Image (cartoon, rainbow, N blue to C red):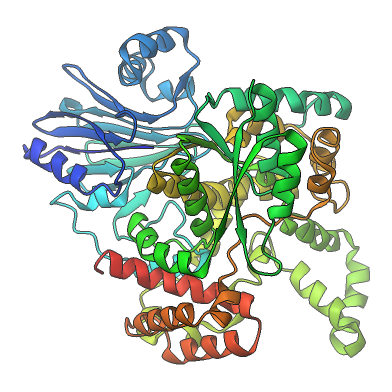
Length: 605
């Protein structure tokens, strides 16, 4: 993995070389052995990487830097990239096309163009949001970085923890873009570019996924599926030191199988297990490994592993991050690196492009209600409200009447309990509890379609993938010292899936109908028949049975209780509910709070 950082000042000559060194020193990675810097009196760019540095370029007028695995559709720029580097191609393309150069730039990337004598900067990230980038701006200064720590290392950035960022984290279990955990710092969203022009910021989406149904027949699309998968996997450039994450689910099994098909030797796949009922999927990973004749490497995560990794992971993330499956992702990547693997192929994204999440079927069921005639609703709703036997009907109607995407969050922890019982009065006075729903609604309404399923897929492309799963896997692989690629999220796959009509993606309420049909002669029967699970962590279960883990959890809960964020009674009630009620359910919120406390401690906040 690579990262980039830098700044542009419009008002005064800064200590450019010293500042870029401070940004470099703030980079949170033990595996960045290669660096690059270019600077002028009023601007500087820098970058770091594990196996090579990002591409940077300086001309008389421009400073450019780009990281990731960029691909060019303009043949002239592709030739420049091949012979002089991607950053020079970016510079030449900017001079030719302006910001429209982004239309010719594909693949995973984050980039910056600085024009110091024009007081101008252009920042952008890739269409899927695989590579991150954030920025701070005021009237005369722009500071950017792949990591927030690189931004706050600039001496003119006085970043403070934003209470709204904490609330957003507790709502989503991560801090979604465009916000961040710090005041004044903003993250780019997938397909977004930011222009800084004489102190003024403008934000635009240079690309967003279109959902135009294909004119091909279903059978023709099914036949195309396999060639699209092979093209996507080949574009990840797997070699003899590449392995695959393997959970045993549809997507990791597909990636493993396609990779094996393209390889002239048995490939290496890596899987994580848990000694906990209902969490271990190793039998499915073994079925896939046997089916494709791959070398399977197994690692079982323990409660002791969790205790060892939590402080390290909290230090690694530049914001609080509450996805508990970061733990198994880290140990899987670390295990692969210890076996000599330098790159892993991950299966993330299949559910979000081929409609595999249970909420899609659930919301489709609720959506049926809007098709009931108003006359029938006028009779049904009073009956459901007044007859106890129709309690489930009443609940269905109440949820069906909630507009999308709000309806998807009805079971959110922060909607299940009054906020006054969760948070302190002082904390609530500093935040707007409507911001999370506003953030969801803005993205949902930006989807270029009225189709319910396609709009949910569009929403998940940002919140589930770019803001969560990709952030999880990227940083854990970086921590382990290994690169990662996502075959299911190569642009050809994403754009192909977007052309499949939703009635084929989901037949009735069956998830991933199209995909399962297309893969029925390729994947193992056990894989096709299993339900979705993934690398879930049995934290709540282990907390009930492992005393050391319980003590660690309760100590961190007491720590977060002292910070003035939460109502102390809420934590006491949460601990009691986890002990006496549903350990896994309440364990999720406990994990979210522990992760927040660990992050605040690790970052000395």
